[in-house]
Image 1 (cartoon, rainbow, N blue to C red):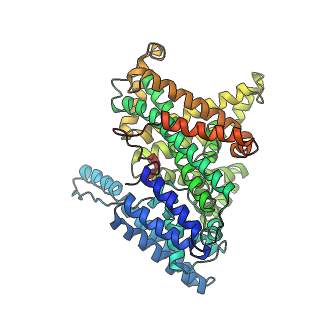
Image 2 (cartoon, rainbow, N blue to C red):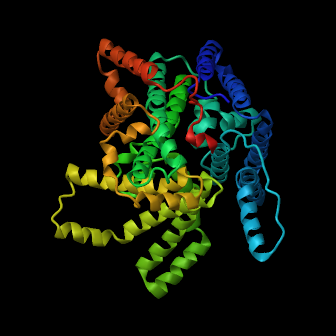
Image 3 (cartoon, rainbow, N blue to C red):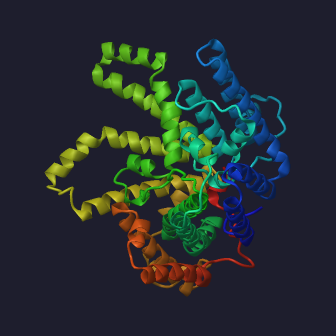
Length: 508
């Protein structure tokens, strides 16, 4: 499998950029198809390309029907068939094992037969490209974008290789004029893209890789590391997850920028959020927007929910008529978000229901919180209050992600119990953290990297850091560039015994 931090990917990327700008502009998108096909074949089992090919063929057929008969019943029937077919492939590949295991559990209770567990090899990025395709079909039906009947253009939209690694989930209307257009070489744009790539590699190899060593050590045997060890691992897992996923996004977005293709941002300094709801508006942004636009809003606008609101207004009043349908729609949304992360109850309950509960309880308790703030005379415009809010959000997210990281719901509950079973704060000062797989030097490098990340994130809250750098003198800019590359070469974790290939979200 080709990692986007591997030398093989670097060679592919550099060669592809060179070819891309040497050939005529009208042929550039054909070259992107060729690069994407090669990347898919070396990064995934080639046979799984049949699933991707099936989705592309179905999408093209549905687009053709809708273009010819956009207003008729045929368009709606084609839309439903296309969505069901694409989601059916996704469900078969990702969730058949989950459904069979639950049927078998029910069968054991009722004395019924046991069904053999299915096993399917999934294509790279199946969750990401399936959601992009479903969104595209809905946008075609709603008239937001024009249906595309060219099979190769649909193949590029679904299989554009940077997106196959870890997303983001893209909209056809935002990419159609970029993917197929001719692009002239632009030194500033390519420079910006390379900056973004190196920043992503820094986050992945210098920070995420080191945090992952400590997390893996503690979570591999939580009974041997109770108390504060588990909290240290939980706090560092969020660092690992963020620098892994956002680092991957930086590499993907930077690589696309070098081709002249601008992808949507997927993160916006999420750890400065003041509420869990705001956190999810800043984290995995394209997934959240997709869920709202294509799932929650259509549900809330449906006839059943409108009738529910009218009925509740008569019996319980305006507030209940507004809140109950909204919270029910949010419940459906968060169950689907949990399922999107994986076919297991730990995702539905930990990634879905936990965050649903945090958001809803936060909204319901907001009047009470305001009274407490007024009674205690708290100035909510101060840095200290913002820091408290962000720390609270960070802790709540860490608890939810115990379920994301550990192997099962039961293991996550066990880890939560062990985290309060022993009071051992001395491990922070007696060198115990140096026994978790990292040397004292590597622990210092990890926390220095986190400090750099915080400083850059704080600057990013105010203005694009790349634009700040672009305004500086040439010598200063190159000192920063060379310094970043030097940090990656000297402090990056790579080489024999270490696999930098696995990005956490690549499994989706």
